[in-house]
Image (cartoon, rainbow, N blue to C red; front, side, top):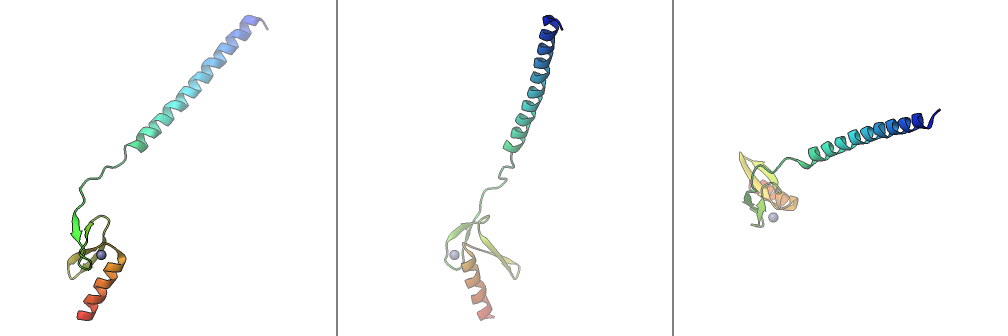
Length: 91
Ligand SMILES: [Zn+2]
């Protein structure tokens, strides 16, 4: 084999290697772009008053209880339990 042929093979191998790595890099960039554009919050939080401790709680974080067609929001499960116990005692 002549040295010229070896050089051509090396160059071809180098080009092929560059093409393969370039393709792989493009894919990872596309994956990063897809994960970065996540869903944005569509509405602002509404504050609800806890009927047990009278704290204001954001609706999305509150413990929700539906009773007789009305929705009640609580700061914690403990307040929700207290409320349902009190309601149960009254009726
Ligand atoms: Zn509470």
